[in-house]
Length: 219
Image 1 (cartoon, rainbow, N blue to C red):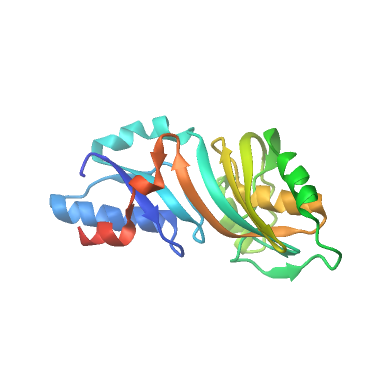
Image 2 (image 1 turned 90 degrees about the horizontal axis):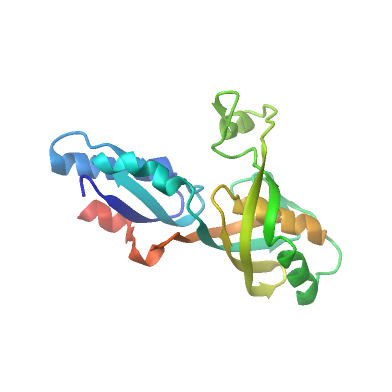
């Protein structure tokens, strides 16, 4: 695996950089020398699923992977908001009215399909004035993140039982599913945040082809 593409099924509770560090350590120990390892797109610590890592000479191919389309399964909690858009933030109740029915939810969800403008979240790894946005946000500093054009190819509602909405979506690179979840909540007038997120596919690579980080560490 010293010069290969490595598919990892990332567990919850670890950063993508943490996964890279562990994989690098294992490969370097096996090779008896330091092996270069890089990722081709991060996942938030609370998220799980497919991470494509490149090792050794394969790291030169990173540009091939950066703009690939992705598929996610997300669980959205309506009626509450989070300061980070996910379970790691401060949660606040935001809706005391009636729960929207399925047809209303379906109509709002489908309104996001297509080319849309999306605000990059403050709690993200994007660089603002040379610093990671999340580093500034965690210190309570004002963060002015850019707005980007992204493509939502489709959204399928897998389940809706108030207050939980579960969706599967295929999106272009650079799309923030946390922001999509929050925007759905805003349009419904309920507020929302992501309680779970799993990346199931990156272009032709699927999470089913990946190996768990635990298993990789044993091999």
